[in-house]
Length: 104
Length: 83
Image (cartoon, rainbow over all chains, first blue to last red; front, side, top):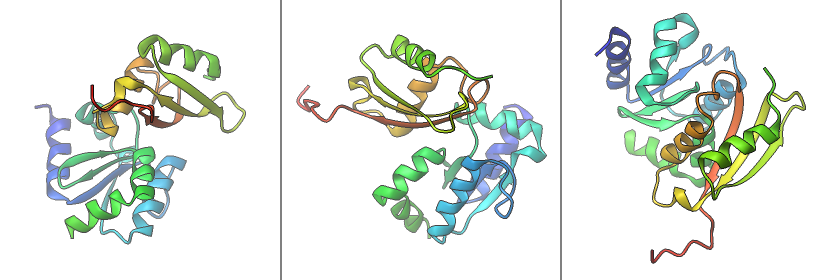
């Protein structure tokens, strides 16, 4: 396991709900990250965020970790859930609420 | 670098031959698109796998050359579930 991969793995395993994003929850730096935060806030989820812009190793490593080319990326209980489009679909269908509730 | 919608559609259907692709240019700048891709090949796949299939068809352009592609995938609703 590369350093980046094990660093990401530690973060994903240590946090039940974690969003890798561009910017912070208060100041998202990209429309897609902003949308992801809006969904989590709407669901009143308890979540951690990782600003990939602060760490090039994580920014590149996360794409390989999940085999997913874009950011944001949501992980719940160690599992990759998806990016902001999937989050929106799951929010609209009620699945994300269920997933996060199961986590509480 | 802007990419025409027709090129995105061509790449997706080259990778997923039965795909019905609908593309909307969200900002009119050739760089922010929404794509809806419907294919029988998505049957039984998780959303993540369906999106990954589209990203694979686009050959690494998403997240690079193609910054913003809002993606929605679906299986045709006439899908015969007995097969």
